[in-house]
Image (cartoon, rainbow, N blue to C red; front, top):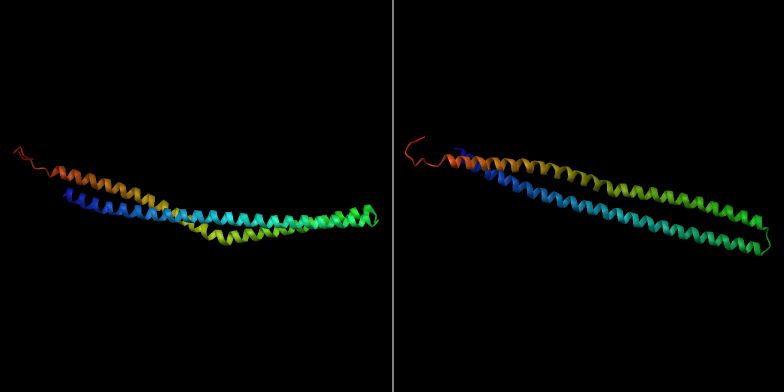
Length: 169
């Protein structure tokens, strides 16, 4: 009886092992794709943020150069150098404050975009990792069941060997 029970159990356990291996492969592939998407999106957002910061710095430098040229023009016209210098300093300070405010607003906008775009993917990634862990645990149990049924089948087969000695059991 152990042979038949072991053989049938081994078949079902083997089928379960193969099914779980297939599911684990599928979930692992999906998790890898999601991880890649997250990385690609983070790279995209970082490059976009750098590009906007570069544009802002270029604009700041352009305005500062215009202000400096205006200060030189005023000095050439004979205006008081201290007054021209103070006007230039106030202008640059105001421009710096405006630039810092813009950079802060830009960083906040990118944080919001990252949250909106990446949070669902990160939640999916976590869900897939949990599913993967669950499947790995179930697979280990199924492999253990398969080995147990295989041993039961082998033990049952040993007990089925006829006694050729004629002495009986």
